[in-house]
Length: 266
Figure 1 (cartoon, one colour):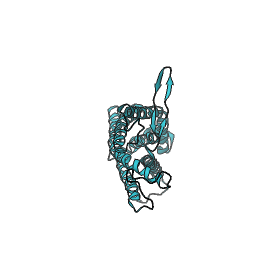
Figure 2 (cartoon, rainbow, N blue to C red):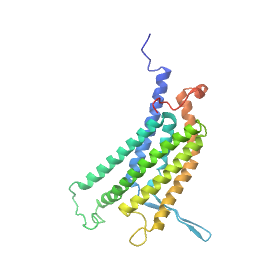
Figure 3 (tube, rainbow, N blue to C red):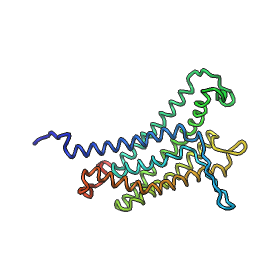
Figure 4 (tube, rainbow, N blue to C red):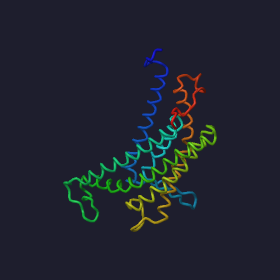
């Protein structure tokens, strides 16, 4: 029996394709998390608009903009690689949160070349290092909030995705991707914005404190944006899934013979 398998054999080529896609999805997922942690609540975008006599307030932290991509990545990983690998990425993402937190904390702890004002622990507003310490102030509380919310929401997303997939016997792809993402993103949004408001005071506010109304405005604005992106994203999700099935199968004639997920341990 010949134990040697050629690197150019169909099985090896398809295995490399699967791992290549997994690395790309994992990179997008983890890179987006790092970006969100640093810039998440450093700026708010006001997209409020008027409909007749009604003013519709929409306030979005910039960290919300790329965040739906993380759920799309975990859904695709769960679809093709199984729940175990999707959960692995979630836990690695949590470690990335800790790593970013540590570097930002250490960067502010080392002896500074600038005097920090005792009341704000920030340099003078005109000093070049003011930007770092301002971002550090927002990031420290934001990362703590996001770590708690992220872990709960991502694990919930993976669980609900797999639940709907098992419940429907692999049918109704739109149901498992939208149902899992919409529920988990609401949990994530409510937790991270509430905690970030409490820990940093970075949310837009009138007077000295953020009011309950302003807090709810940011939560529901952020969730509405995520919901719209998720529903609209169903189309590219379908395209990605069916394109990857064909890509992984190696030939469109064999696509229906492939049974996913591609792990035997999930």
